[in-house]
Length: 189
Image 1 (cartoon, rainbow, N blue to C red):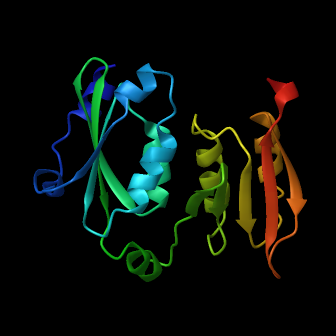
Image 2 (image 1 turned 90 degrees about the vertical axis):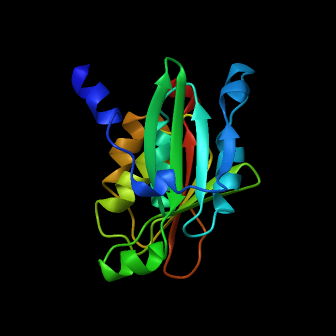
Image 3 (image 1 turned 135 degrees about the vertical axis):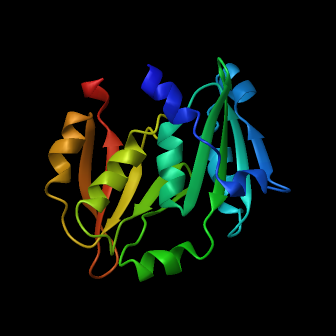
């Protein structure tokens, strides 16, 4: 427990103090009403430009959200202000795609359309596609369906999905694309 406390008491990066006119979302009232804040958070995050900041107030440390936004090009800093009150600063990295390309790495692209989540992992080196997909489906608000855009059949992903109670089916995609539809297996719950 002491180690966890030390991890979250680390000194904030300079960009946190220089957040300026950050966009904000307090997820605590939404969660208290039983509403799911993920879609408004993702919509807000998609409008954040390079170098801009988003501040999220939450009743807990939203680690899956932090991983998801990391794949969208954000860095973050979380701090527990009081029991049941976390403040998470997200900053979109400047030229995240250029940095990733320079390092030989890419990030998964995540978006939602008409109540369906999409994740494009094409161009990622194994095991990054599997990590990104698992991170997305382990996010509490993502109950399915999820459309995966891949460049090869992810045979090592299938046992991981089954273990987590998800089923999959290959669906039509673009030429050279392996497209999967993932759905939570209702019988497994």
